[in-house]
Image (tube, rainbow, N blue to C red; front, side, top):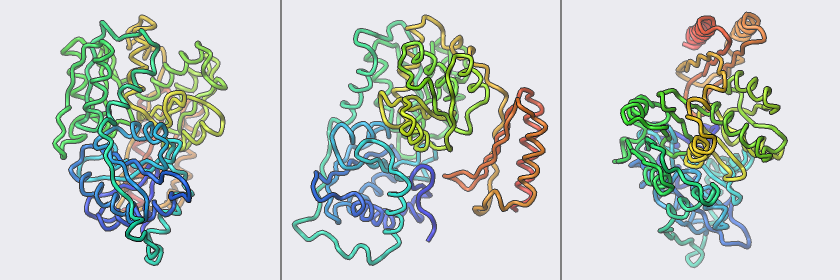
Length: 449
């Protein structure tokens, strides 16, 4: 059977395996078997983004969970971090988000959170996956009186919004700031604008009218061209862009420059250290984070440690080291003092707050971090292949690393969510970096045809 779980749950094309209702029904049944407790509420919280397919998959997942004797509470569209937060604060057994994150509407996905608000570890995902492929596993279904019930949490968004606002000191406001928010026609379209507005900011919203198929379409954190334009047109102090499920944020400064996850980790990490709240004076990034960020942290007495790509792996490393700040270049930022997963609305609020607190424009905060030139090329492949099985690739990468020396890096990895191999090269000389990235990407393409 094809592997179900990738680096961020299950994901695929809607109405095709594994994102077809038949498979999702089994996923719900298998998850209930793994998560059900002898004593407890046996309640699973289910949220989703704004994709049209969310209705279909929500029904299938609910049916599977209830069939095995667990109960379900539905929130409707809400950001992924909202489910993480509510699962923990409502003391439920698990949370589930139906979303394909930054992908377009043709795709959808499922990701699970445990009772403490963290994504399920690989071991539990493996158990669920094994049960889905075992037809005999579902023979012990709940009897008539033991079938689960489905409820609806009407004030889910309101609870999450009030929590976000409570994460900054009482009395602080964003008055005087003008912010553009690109909601990606996704789950945060009624969250981030409301939070910023209720804290006093003048908010201009774009891409905030989801219709089920326009999620991430020419907007959001992967396409910020319209956000840049709007920030400059309105003379805004900052722009905020989320992806479809709002577990990530990319900002734009008042000059139209991108403020990515590396910038935000740098800005937030230094501030937390100044406040004496950066546990271990350490920030957890990933192998994709820029070498310039590592050097910036070192200049401020902060250690940067790297995890595998995927905010779940960042969170796991943070837990092991008792660190509180970590994240990804892509905008998944985790502050364990505030939430247990990447939280786009909270990240946006706290970085924008620093513009007021430090009395500096966002561009000045961004420019304090020297980011090395970096080139990322995604090579599409017809079928999955281990990087180690591509003849000659390892030697080519070693030669390129020697060429870059201590001032650069090469990273080649398979995507955990798409049929692609990602090539990342960074160094102090942009032309050299671009040339090496193209050479490696062309080599992969020629040898995986």
